[in-house]
Amino acid sequence: MAGPLLDDTGATGSSPVHFTYLRIWQRQRDQSFRVLLDLHVPTPRPGVSAQGFTRAPYSNRFTEYDDTTPPLGTADELLNAGLRSDPVRAYRQRLSSGVRFHRPNVAPLESERRVLQWLATQPAFASVNTRRSEAARSGDLGFTWGTYARAGRGTGRTGHYVRVWVRERDGQWRIAVDVLQPQ
Image (cartoon, rainbow, N blue to C red):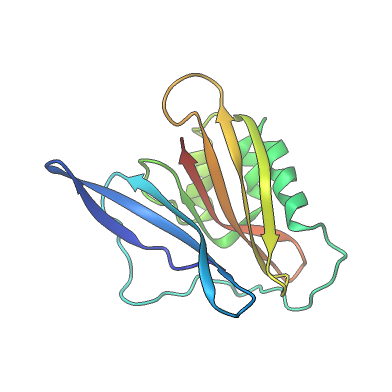
């Protein structure tokens, strides 16, 4: 469902522009895969990646599907409700061990500690609304997409978010990747 995260460098005028990408793939009825979402977020410098493919850490994997825990859309809506008042508290119990945050003009944040430290410097959201949620048939991976607005004026105050979620052994959804895409 989620494609690899790639760093790329483009050129605008005489100065390079750097991006981090997130691509979400979806299996089609004919068993082929198609790109469902393709996002890029500007970063202040080129990203550093290990050579080759590096699998995201995911040792606490959910393996037995059942319908007793809240659906993914509910997990996203509960997070969004908390983001309107206290982003650190809202995210604190919902981050997976290998979490990755992509924010405009910020190098990717790659650990729970770094994400929470950075969030402590950010304002709450004025509104955050889930527009779509979808989970794999296996019940262990999914994504949500929605809109956000922050108080105040200026660039990046409104836009879209995408989250890739993993369902852990305890049945709870945790965020693996969280991306803001300003309008």
